[in-house]
Image (cartoon, rainbow, N blue to C red; front, side):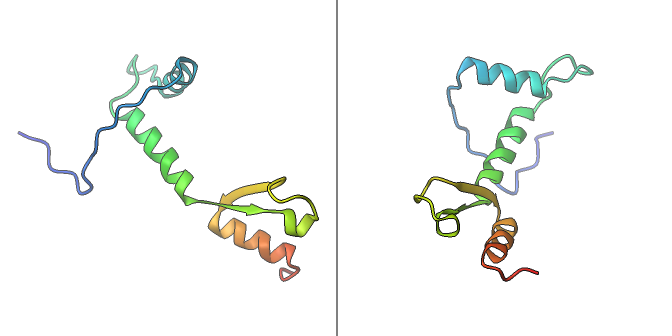
Amino acid sequence: MPYPKNVIPTVYLRVGLPEDLHTKMTLFLYSELEQRVPKGSYQNFLSDLIRGFFGMRRLDLAPFAGVDAGSYIVTGSEASIALLKRTLNGAHK
């Protein structure tokens, strides 16, 4: 019986990783129970990281700290960055 179609189609991507990063990722994903990296673990791990990357926002603290632009940049979720901005502007009590 064939697998059902994915709601979101999969696109295959071939990338090369530095060996040390591949080793760290493999050790992180390795399952003692299965004695291997479980099926789909690489895909899920990388998909979560990529979603997290695109879900993050950046805020340059230069206008608030009186330093050169780009010297101090923080990254966080959209809600976290909005709260930080309000706090730095003195609007949060």
